[in-house]
Length: 306
Image 1 (cartoon, rainbow, N blue to C red):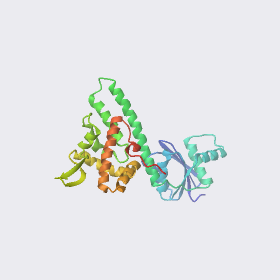
Image 2 (tube, helix red, strand yellow):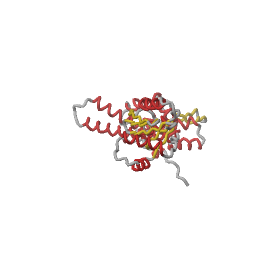
Image 3 (tube, rainbow, N blue to C red):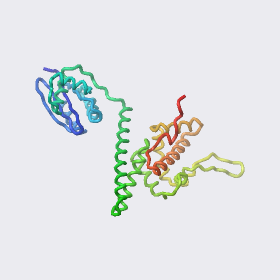
Image 4 (cartoon, helix red, strand yellow):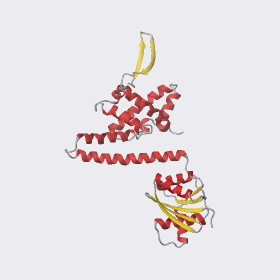
């Protein structure tokens, strides 16, 4: 008899096979490996009305979301085991078959017989980095697909222009969101303002169009006011760049370093933010022209360590 139930979870991309050992009984269950499936599984564990010791193998992205959900659940202890250790344990039990169901049984036995080491989740910073890396990977894959679609569309005269244009818009959208600071909402605001500009415009003309070009203010022969932006351009584009500039200052190291050196030179914060907006527009121009993701080193080179 055991005071707690021992649970093994074999996690794959789509499913979670579960084995529960409770008071000599062995219960098995399969759930979907998604948020709804995780909720149903945890509710089932709670229904036993006793603490649960759960063992999962460390399988990267497939197991992390479930691990986080189990860690937050009440009366659940979680161990994320090294797959090498669980394989050795299975061999010691003379387990010859290897199926998802058998693997779950092995992990339940592991939870009951072996030293239990409680899992601690990664820090918030690491999880944020994980999310950003996933997003970057997804955008890279999708852009590759869109480029293939554009090539196929250009190869036939039967493809409507509206379809070709939609593919082009999607590619530019993905380029914009490669900047840590330009999320989907900001990209949607920036996109229509830059795509309507004539293709032959220079980057200086883009900046002037946005009203971000510096203008000197003089009065007579002796009064010269400090330099300001002209604000004689597209106010929507200017507003659309403001929040991305603030976010990029925080999350893009090269953008933040550029901002910091302006502040160190005595620039007021708002002046430095406007300078970031202008330089960010320069970067977007180059990204669209060269079909390249944002490159922080091209934006501003970080000072070399001594």
